[in-house]
Amino acid sequence: MLDLIAFDADDTLWHNEILYSDAQERFQDLLAPYGLDGRARRELYETEMHNLHYFGYGTKGFALSMIETAIRLSEGQIEASEILEIIDLAKGMLSSEVRLLDRAPEVVAELAASYPLMLVTKGDLVDQERKVAQSGLGPYFANVEITSDKSEDFYRALLARHQVAPERFLMVGNSLRSDILPVIALGGHAVHIPYHVTWAHEAVGAHGGATREYAELEDIGLLPMFVQQLCQGDGAGDS
Ligand SMILES: [Mg+2]
Image (tube, rainbow, N blue to C red):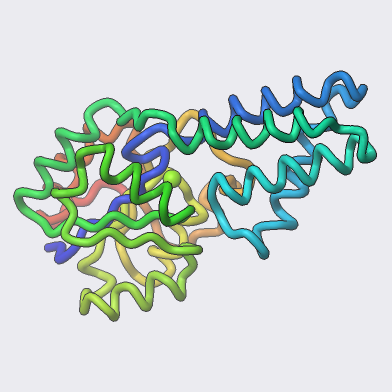
């Protein structure tokens, strides 16, 4: 049996990465007049990785990384009006409508009837709170955890705080790095539901060196059946 089912939010319940891919494309177009060809996107990723330590995850940090990259790559030639365009790009991301993944609301409602649910997400506090509110899914979650990172230590502390044994915990998410590997390392259950776009930072190789098995579902619509089988001791692919 399970005492707690936790869901990742971005690209598990609602679309997110697609906003970043679109922004990266527009960023590249913005810098095209400076003769950078394909370099802008790659350099932006490098800057983001370097800045994670300072800014954490989310759109605000992404915006600052875009500005830094634009100034550096244009050797200071970028116009103030173009910096403003970058800021507007980020504001557009922060005010874009939340688009739920197909079947996500039905599945969350169905599982909430039988299990306590938790939402566990990284990112900017204000932005994630806005998305939870706009999604309409908030009432189904007994707890919403917005965290700076999803490490093994984070999950260990989370489970201790909620007095849930790892073997009675199931995490559902699209990122192997953040949602799956740390949870199975602790002895919990995890279901990976890949999204069609994965941020390079979250991508890990096949099974990512996992020692335990986790389940992979093609579609969140398959989750209630999986949970039922798991609770009957027949969890397909999970040990
Ligand atoms: Mg995600």
